[in-house]
Image (cartoon, rainbow, N blue to C red; front, side, top):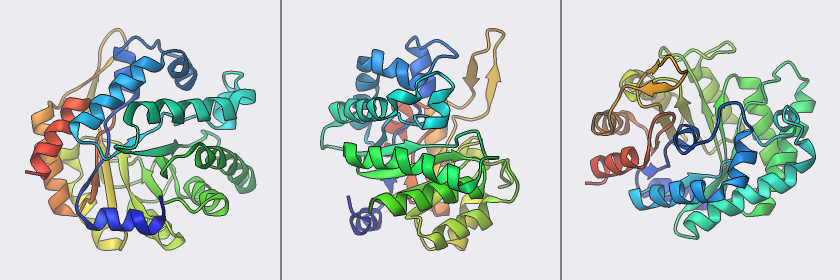
Length: 286
């Protein structure tokens, strides 16, 4: 997919993403503490079924589950030598699930090593994004990012190795502040100026807390605004499981308000399921 084709897609109307991956994999039996990417490779049918359901619910873009399949994160599981194999297999699983009926985004995220030199981060993202591009993803998304510098490294890396569209998505406090300093408004503007094809928010909080944030980002940038929130705020049970408070119907109602506030690309993060995406589709495409 070219950057121009992405722009044309967004001009046609609101673009619907998928919902959560990790929380649904845990419901399907993925143990805590394992390498998610490796587990998916060994249980590919779970992801295929989930992403087929997202496609049926109305998702126009699904995220390949390459979230932490970068060299630094994989090294924590002794898997850095399988980096290319794992990324290619995960993209293949998503393509098996949705075929050409839906766009597949190559997903990258924070390395957890923001103290690393910029050049090191650039090399890590350049390596993963090159593999994802070669594996045939339609676009790149950097999501759940914690600060500007690491996100800039991911964006620079993408621009160096391929011509694919890139979305940059931060996780924030409800007031728009970033976990590693600064705020999402200045960061979104900086990333848009650098050439991000869309900017926005994912994870963080529920959609009921983001209307003012989305409206301000929309006033700050000229590129499309993405919002992919959690299903409300979680309650942690005694067994450690996070239970999210917002039901699908309520979630969809709040997401419709975020579209009115200026969000052009929407979906769901932790706690959301295909049912949530279906309800959002019913609200915004009715």
